[in-house]
Length: 235
Image (tube, rainbow, N blue to C red; front, side, top):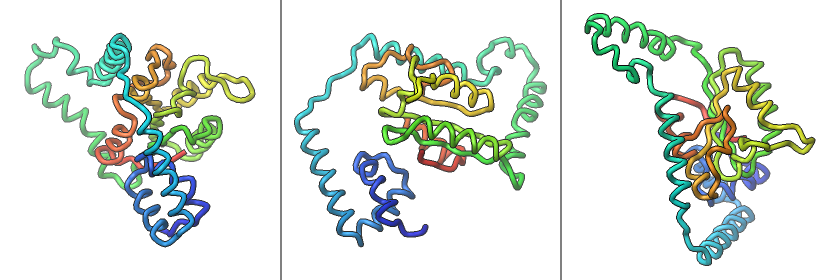
């Protein structure tokens, strides 16, 4: 990876202190900090500030009713994501040979996608409090238009979820939900961190229908990279 410049490194320092960078970005930043005294000093300042703020805070659990509501929403999302053949009991009566054939047919496209050169481009976009959602949505729309077959997932956590809450608008007063729904219709998935909702005590019913909940935004990004081969892009 090309060495970071100070201009590239400084916006990453806060995310690094908060433990939000992926492995590649963290290693690149650490190499830069090792040789740049100015950025290293900024990193030290932010670490001390985080420690000082944390020392004065006490963890307050989210209300039980809110935790139950988030749990119900997460269970519903998992149930919708399960393959239909696992949700229905009617298949118990189907002969085993038919089930095997059906499974082979269902898995064939997946195997082809993994083996075929030039398979679908897969990107997970990371959105947090440093992201300008209007700019992010415009960039994603441009990417979708220029990359036919793109498989895109937007994972939002911390204050980055705000544009996916009901009633959120951009600086011109336009509702974000309209642009999110348009991208959703083009195959872009939007996922909201359940931990963030619990920590900020946000009712999960405020999340717009185009987005779904996942237990942890950071864990979802890691899973998509490690288990499903998605490339990471910070917005």
